[in-house]
Length: 295
Image 1 (cartoon, rainbow, N blue to C red):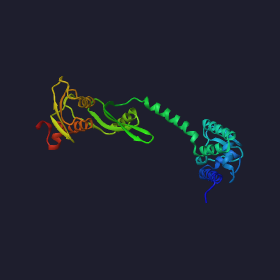
Image 2: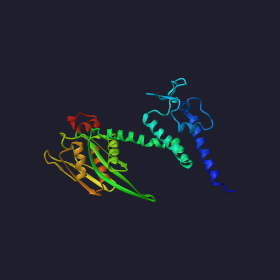
Image 3: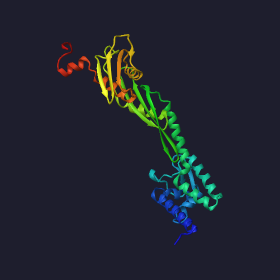
Image 4: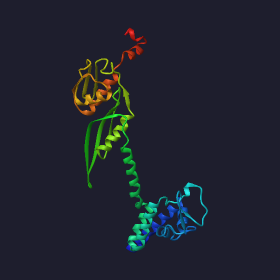
């Protein structure tokens, strides 16, 4: 037998009432007591609380609204939901709107109040303030953006843009690292890549803090790289990607050759593999179990 529209509306109101009652029973019992000035009722108490949330309650600086007729609870789990004046004003505006709205609009507003939809802008504003504070923090390591790749996923609602950033970080004194990050915009992807690269740093051995100790080769996929030491004052004779890595590592004199694929990701990985394989005389002596002057 088909269900009439009136029966569907009644069923919807029953569902909203059950959700509200479950929320009150689950951990907000004191909210109903605070809002109504007494014990919560089983019929209509949740709706009365939303329409008149501050009846029989007094404002407290740290605990929000506290009932004047009930003893104060020490457990934080029973603290009222209305903790800030901004939230109180938002719910008061919602209560006034519920009073002036027709029945169909009231059902929608009551559902919004139970879900806490009206508080989302307040929470988002707090997140924006925290994000602005984080943006002003200076970075401890130098950063070079090697590559930014953009992808677009076509959906029914439109294209979804995503960015992938490859970043190299270092202190200019032998400590260097790299990582990738993904985000909805370039700045977010770079921030994620910087955070990951800062947690995966390596130390590069240098000769006289200007060049490498010996020539070294490495290969990653179809990219092969050859690093060769250079005399002091010759500078960096290599492509831009290897030059950026050397600047972050504090290498000022180097000659490099990239053979095969010049893809940025493969070039960075091959260059790091070659730099990590470089050994100083002290490392070789420790591996052979002899002193440095015998090498």
